[in-house]
Image (tube, rainbow, N blue to C red; front, side, top):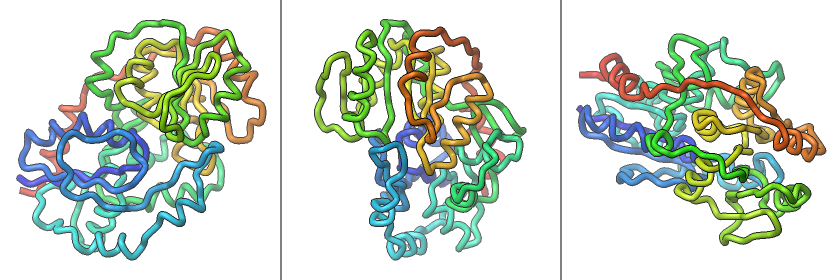
Length: 329
């Protein structure tokens, strides 16, 4: 059996989940990997057969998507060329993690593929989401269209939705509390974060930044370029995680029973929905309209946080069910 696994390369969550799923898919046959996008800091250890430009949203430095850089990075001619050249008919199963080139190529060539992603969960109307008119809704539904859907979310909101894939390297961590707070806010410049966190000098902050090439310390704030191993160690030993409205990062913090505070990116509908879902569980959120973050952060640091999430390790069973149901033999 030949399998194509197409992965979105914007952000680190898709690649991180793929590192857990790839060895499972390899048990069923010959696996080719496709990655498109330009914004991931985490890399795969397995060879990538198709490395495509795709379509990535570029993180800004003020809490949102940089629309101008996103537009400059767009290459529709290359997107169309890559879409036409993919030899999809040679595969028995095409698995898509919110990857647009292969999804639209399947649609163009009349080939079925299955979504295996967090975004697939939004096909259910039962998933919590704010009642807003947002162009992001259209992007979420049309960005990587597929016929079949297997989704992941913080809760089992529907029959085809599972709890998050927690990487083995996270499940195997020894969780303890050394008192510091871990920060990953890729759409905010580290200089802005340093200015914010130095106003709480009694707290130690470990900031992982997409915008700094070197590590440095300013007062009680330690800044590191994004590094998977160092981040995992910081997360395992922190008191809490302050991060964006992504999915994998918050899920891993909840699994490790860490305090969690999220600030979803502005102009990113999926992150707004994730934050809205976490808000339903009583977890704190800093919305884009919030001007003064300091009181919310101070309250979060000073008070305990109680939550209980159950994320069992079901990934192997999910993959087995998917292959048996959707592979074309």
